[in-house]
Amino acid sequence: MIRPVRLGVLTPSSNTALEPLTSAIAASIPGVSAHFSRFKVTEISLQGQALGQFDDSKILAAAELLADAKVDVIGWSGTSSGWLGFDADHRLCERIHERTGIRATTAVLALNELMALRDISRLALVTPYTADVQRRIIDNYQTLGIEIVAERHLGISVNHDFALVEPEALRRLMADVATAQPQAITTFCTNLHAARLAGEIEASLGIPLLDTVSTTVWGMLRVAGADPGAVRGWGQLYGWR
Image (cartoon, rainbow, N blue to C red; front, side, top):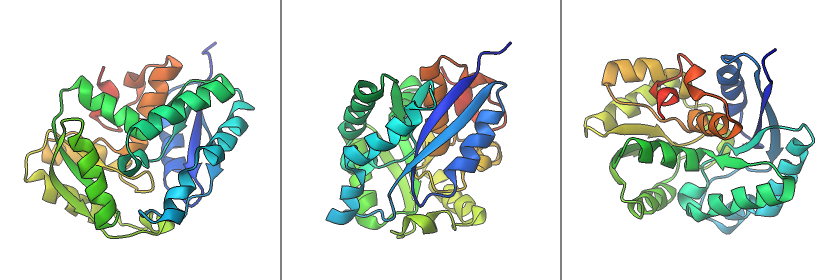
């Protein structure tokens, strides 16, 4: 009998993309399932009320609910440390482990790990965010020695509306940034329907797509002791070690 692997996923309350995408990816591996807990996130901006949504106490309360399901790992499927600073995710993972006894990872920490594995220093950034949020993400990646060689953003701040961005718009944005010849493209938001596009984008552009819904799953599988390479049809990153 295959040992079940339960992935516990922390989800922004207004996100409608990551749950079906994560479940579909997890279902491609026998015995793996995804389980979700939400906390309130409705706006992405640098305003005080928006930054306050990521207070650890709210996230930890959601993590404790996942612990009741005896999940093997807890993953924060969100990109907030892109503008808050990467240390925010490191601290969050430590606190989740202290509170629940369950190891944790995040979309952004897994993305950064993937880039380190492949020595990626030239990255293209596609997001739905506003210009000031985008600038903060670019600046934070500079501190890691990663150059954002091209970027596109849509100027949206309402989290619910990110999921309304059409796949064709995402294809155009990725084609635009590909002209700068990055080593990888990231669709840096877990409320975009981008993960399913990985196969066609990689085939047409010849550039790996590191979508942050997928990076979260990759990171959770690694922490849980499962093989991400068992995932097929969701992009090259699942084969990276």
